[in-house]
Length: 65
Image (spheres, rainbow, N blue to C red):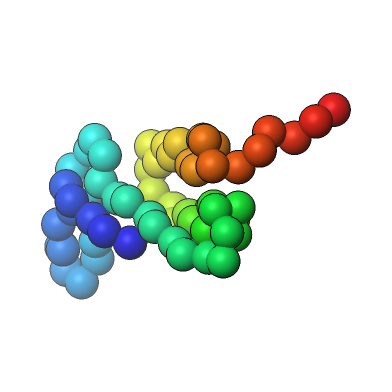
């Protein structure tokens, strides 16, 4: 995880808004790396949090049906 737009206040990380985190992951395939990136996101929570839902979409075949 890479961060920007964050500050440490009293041993607690706080955000200053905007795009503040970049979660990356590796895997034996793009699909595995995608799954691991979303697993990393699951442990992150803060007020106003939003994240992209199309991570790695170009490298993973679309589901049929």
